[in-house]
Amino acid sequence: MTAVSEGAGELLEPLARVAPGERGATRIADRVVAKVAARAAREALGPLPPDAARPYATVVVHHDSARVSVHLELDYPCDIGARCGRVRHQVVQRVRALVGMSVPEVAVRVERLHLAAEYGARQGRTR
Image (cartoon, rainbow, N blue to C red):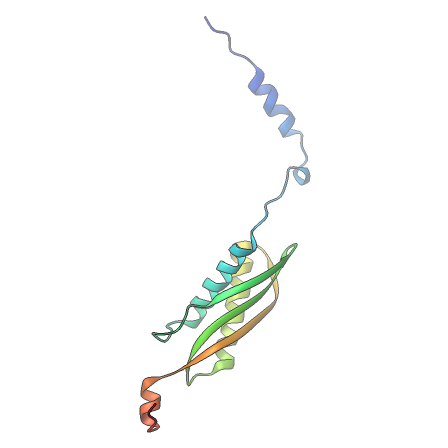
């Protein structure tokens, strides 16, 4: 007959005595924060022009805060300021909720404006 060792119980006991602050920390990669921010920007924009690139983000993480730069393309005509404001708000909310970081700064860079086809036709423009 085989005897059961109490070694497993001995291994668990010292782990229980370690203070919570000394057990380690979870580090979230910058690229994960960037993907969350880009997805949040996409959610805030709604439908994009057919030939527009998807929004992307770059981040700089320092401790528990992330500075975000979002690059996007918009259709035109639109209220650019209002749409950028919605993107900023959504990025701050989603990064805080999903990653647990504060976002003191969100820079929104509009890389390109796409002229709506019907707008150009109404104005009598051809290119």
